[in-house]
Length: 305
Length: 260
Image 1 (tube, rainbow over the protein chains, first blue to last red):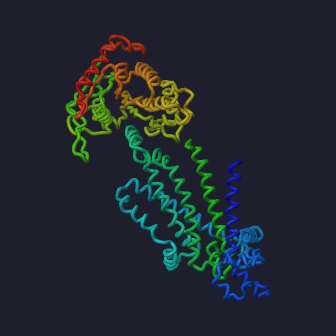
Image 2 (image 1 turned 180 degrees about the vertical axis):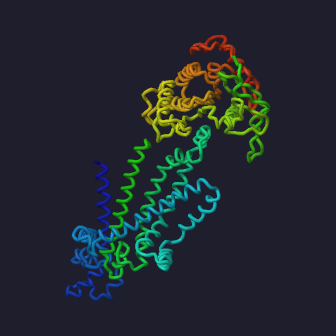
Image 3 (image 1 turned 60 degrees about the horizontal axis):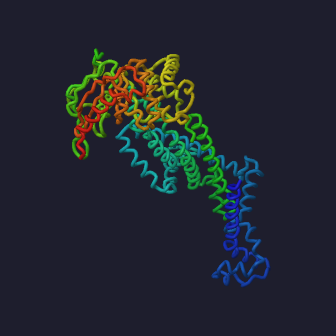
């Protein structure tokens, strides 16, 4: 109960800081609009206000404060504006509408899940190869690491162009970018997990004259499960980032990335923030879902902490 | 009573190549272990007692001399699943129940489901863990876990049991109890047991033959055939015969120790 109170206090503090930040961010725009509408603003003239500290403007034009939280295109939208936009575009819109965040969210989510499945499968296969073959360990691992040093934003357009030129478009290019980001944590985690059994465990199976396959299925794979789940949680978040980034350079018309891009073209900051929050909520749900699957699986395996 | 040689080592040598140069872990080791013997290997760290046990199990390979297990090379003996090996730590799989841990070697060796069940019940009884089959390892005490690991080594009926300081990490009282149980188990199953230990009382109490080893290079300094009767209650440890054997072991250890 006490921790609930503490958590709520932190959330309240963040929201308060956010509202406070809206004042200096939006005051100049608000005053310009007010002046145009005939209100008396001090000092007069946008040019005179340009060099002034925004806090001083807030202090001298107290009447304008509520308006900094109600602008149509604020520099920084207030929390309730984002919340309202989120509500309007999810609950109050049919999900078939092009303005529904549920629709855009689903477009991104489907690419995320496909990419996550490809990335996880690839990651596990690579990890199995790396653990069993020294050659693969030395040849694949460095490339896997190098691959993650390339900014995805630079690589994404090229992946899309190359795939388009061979006739692949739609969900696949986005899923490929998504997989590109998510396979890496799975490789690293699975390699660590598959190698986690100690020499004694391996010697024990040797005394049974167990085959390599038996060592893998009965020892290495189950021992790697906790590591796999830790990696999957990172991987799914990376997948979502990949899918969104994959929507940016294509001029895609659907998906959270497209929504972000359209918002920035038309200065619709509220729409951008709503899309950002939708992405964050989606990521939190995916990670939470994986955490739940982890708990159930490890419990059934008798490995719950 | 030692009619049939189960393990026979002749001029056994093993040298490890390490970064600091070669280390001779075993030097000119000669030993015959008969069927049904309970042989303890005792000596300070680095005397090669564990290495010797690992050579028997084909987990290490000698660089000189010869060794046979059941008349075969250790590798062949391993292929024939001639021995069960108990490590210092129980090493049970946390994701398997006790019963399924014991089934592990049986699954690998391809026993039928019905046979697996029957064997699990039998060995759980042998180590006094009836009713614990469905528990997970973390639900058991250290001593019980080690008993489960012994059950796992017994499950496939190998006639040799190799034990590498199996009770080393347990406290004195639990250890006494497990020693007593181990002797009973040995009497019932008539297995040949190789047992590595640090403890003089443990070695003397358990063994029919005590092999005293010394380090740098690892070698056998004394082999003592115990005069103690087969029937051994715990208080046999206060009898003059027991103390005399213990004294001889201690002398052997002291003679081989260089204190450098």
